[in-house]
Length: 323
Ligand code: BDR
Ligand code: CA
Image 1 (tube, rainbow, N blue to C red):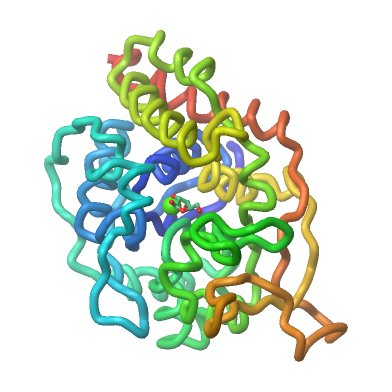
Image 2: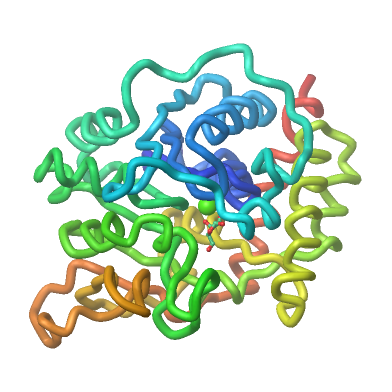
């Protein structure tokens, strides 16, 4: 039997988060041990609802879901940005209706689950945050052992290209720059999958049509939600010619780091002034040994897209087909 890597997804579910979930479930190398909910594309409560509903739709009702911190470390509330609603829809999944799941969220908090999981599994576990980094920073602040042992592959940031919510800031970092800064400075093993590479991995309706043609509920959902996302990109970034597969690429790298070229460095996030939310090298540690972070600066686009269609396709063919 193939050895599996345990994985936790920390999602703000979100259409590309949903695709990341499908990618993880369709990857035989991965065992999804839990989904923790963060905020960004949606509020935490909506994220929890979507996670439970999509896990059921994808035939993975056994995977537990944990509610995370509802807002940034330095704030006491959070409201979804207009641009996020435009891209993902008010319900986060492109206004596609998916029935509520038959089960409820776990009683344990996301932060406690993250800490406990790293304690239990150590480096057999990879954590993939694809929304605001608040849960991860909170876990690091509460448990130095977590910061020391957690292996993190996060979607967020932009090193060599502009941001997508401001000229400097990418959306996930922008939600909570203090949390992201804490994470990249204090995590012992942090990999950044930012816009540098995720905007090179694009999907079009030619691919979503393949899912729709399967005639399954999962395939229909994946096609309809992703088409909504593609239409939003036609307005916000028409030059790209497709939608960015941000969050699935982070899961792809968790399975196979050779999909990207990684630049080792000491990272930081600007938390003040016009560049608030920018991911950049830490000027106090230029040339310092043993960088704790790696930033993806190139991607094997074709190989990733093949892996993506293969893995998400397994989930899209899914459980209607087996019934
Ligand atoms: C990131 O922001 C969210 O809208 C997406 O789900 C992705 O995680 C892209 O900047
Ligand atoms: Ca996301």
